[in-house]
Length: 184
View 1 (tube, rainbow, N blue to C red):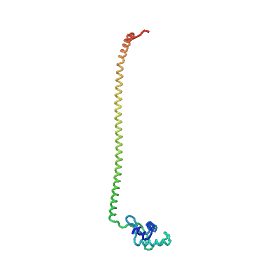
View 2 (cartoon, rainbow, N blue to C red; view 1 turned 90 degrees about the horizontal axis):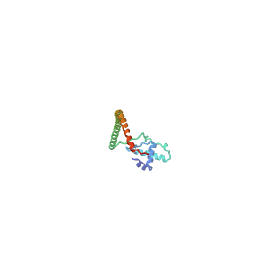
View 3 (cartoon, one colour; view 1 turned 90 degrees about the vertical axis):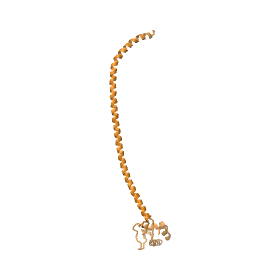
View 4 (cartoon, helix red, strand yellow; view 1 turned 60 degrees about the vertical axis):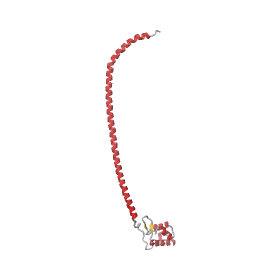
């Protein structure tokens, strides 16, 4: 018998029956879903409890019949094959999830290692590029120094020629200037 059936037989609510079972620790079994399942003997005990309460006895002072044993825990009725199958499926899912979690942990460790290696390679690449740029700068500086020295040599040889040429142009300029000079 379930809780509602017992409650209707006693003329009380299902919550009242549940409260009595819990407070008095009555020996009611539970099914695989956790619902109370009452036997005929359990109903007799509940009728005795109801009678004592109607006589004004406080719930903590209620005396249970000697045949009523105190409940020691939850008793689950024998499970059906569907329930057993469902339990097996849930256990398999749990095993699968645990395996996936372990695999996930291994993947995360692998990803961390790959990220570390990638960072190391990137650092090595940057270092190589810096060294390559340094070599290019050194080559450019050497070329610049070479050009500077060539320029100095060129200017040293061309200065005397230009000095002589400028003197000739000075002498030539004088006759031309006299032509264009206006007398004032």
